[in-house]
Amino acid sequence: MLGGQYMDSKSRPHQIVWHIPDHVEPVEPEDRRAVWGRQESSYHHYWGDEQGSWHSNLLPSPVGNRAKIFLDADDNAYAIFMVNQTDEWKFNIYFKKGNLVIATASAKSKWSDWKLIHREPGPFLNQALFDDTRWETDGVLSVIAQNSSDSDYTFAPSDIPNRRGGGFHEDLTIKRLTQPTPLRILDFKLDRK
Image (cartoon, rainbow, N blue to C red; front, side, top):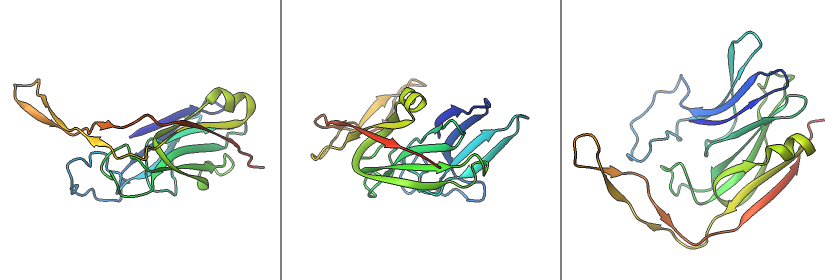
């Protein structure tokens, strides 16, 4: 699953995706909702060089949700993403009890030295977003994270019409109904020097 994309100072593309590594044999999920394959997957950082060849490095973290990638003025890479605190909703792309994770890799190593540098305890809901303008102008990583609700969710699965030949198919998306929760702005000054 594609996460984020960013161009470095030499116009080389960088992407963070998660997928099952080539050496891992996929297994049939124990639950049909496990469409995202998070349990056997890893985060992969793909980057293109000046000759048009693509390279890949693994991040040392369990997969959570869509990661965002960005680079500093020296082309050091950073990634942010949420990881689930529990197995609750382990089959869904979204989860209720996430921690924010920040990882980094150096341009000097050709981004092969990914390491986790910060874990901000939640519980957070959904995906982390960052202010790319503030990052580029001030060098401050300003992350927007939404607090999770203390109340339980009301599940409302439903069947939806099948447009190909009539009938219905099961809607595997679970609608979550709860009270709104506050957004948090988390500011980080990241310095590799």
